[in-house]
Length: 614
Image 1 (cartoon, rainbow, N blue to C red):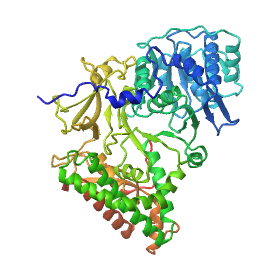
Image 2 (image 1 turned 90 degrees about the horizontal axis):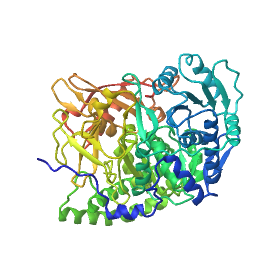
Image 3 (image 1 turned 45 degrees about the horizontal axis):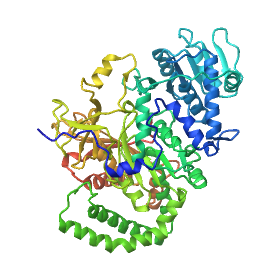
Image 4 (image 1 turned 45 degrees about the vertical axis):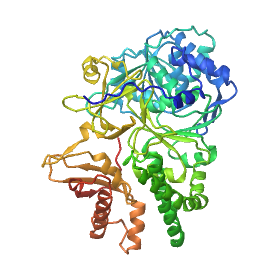
């Protein structure tokens, strides 16, 4: 039998890391944290939304007071402990006040974006049994109103200050009215416990109806009390928030960072570049697409430089790539060779010394300016929600921006593992959180597999959901009798217990010759090409792989102009020269990928202009 990893024990290094942050070992619910934080950091700015009208700034004392007031308003409207409230809204300080005001009143919330499809939101309202609806705006309320007649919704609250029309059947108030109601009522404390349900987060309904993931206060408190092993923020540290706040990933990270007295600044795609420079964040939580966007913006600036400067930048980047790869091997952090021989380590050490001066020159001339474009104060950025392509991982390592990649799912509230700053193994998703078990099993037989062997990833720990709401059949399929949750992901564990993900079990492409292809690593390799913005492999039951490619039109047009190819009124993507360019790019990047096999070759491809979306 192979060695089966035990629950990740807390190392001495992790214990020291946790001593640098505030934990809440005796707190039973998320809402109970804020009285402590408000007492510790009353005058520190908690939430800042510079893009709302008017601009919003709330200290921790003010935030806690508004949470209490909102909770008292809910109780005045008849909300009882354990009752479910639907919160359909997007990022704003009022979302956070409503979220924690709901929990403070003892209720459970079912959350979703205000941009979600009407039928999906109505399904969530029906499935969750919500009796009160919190909607972001009057426009959302009006969009949903016709579908509420057969639902038990008796009250609706707008998070805006818009004046709602009178409704014959449903009581409708705006945010100011609820706060006014709360100001005239005393909040009745409600004792919640770790095992009590805190929230329902509905998974995407792409393969059927959405499933309501039941996360308890214990699930969320485990994340709040454990994430300090990854980052150790100081009170007043600035955090730039861009992800949907109702997602389990952003939400849990917000809970942790705010529990430490950080200042959260809201941004969006339109303002992120400006906000990075203006607010100089210490931390940022984002998905790989954000890092791709930042990377491409930097590359665009490089391409706009005179040829002589481009040559210098590329030479310095090449030397720095060699430097960081040699340094990884020297430190035992090369995923392709985790146990180098003494000779290999000595050679890597010599190469590190050889390229260090050029890397230092690159830092002085180029990389320092890149860091300044992100504000210049970033301690760590946290990446999750998808695989981070290796070229992005390496680039940000080169320029001195430390990315800590984590792994998890909504069903695991969400973090299962994350890289540590002192052991940042690029290409991996880090080590399990203390108290968490990850196991790799054969996809069919469920037999445990040894380190290094790829299989299905199972997880067990305090962060695993209670189940799917009112769906015992789906719960039974997801969590076995011993508490192991089937993630649906494929991967392997290194001898040091770092998890490396290789794809989704359902994404595996089986060619007609029987070869199994995991698309993710090949897609990541192709994304190194500056001409490729997005790519998706296809080819189930075919002789070879194919690809759908969204080209980077800015880079492609610049190339076509230099080649004398007509770009007006539009560049012909079917032109022979363009097709040959992408054939060369695909062939080079796929062949340069570690572990290349002939079956990885992309035989056919189609260029499409509409970007992929959810």
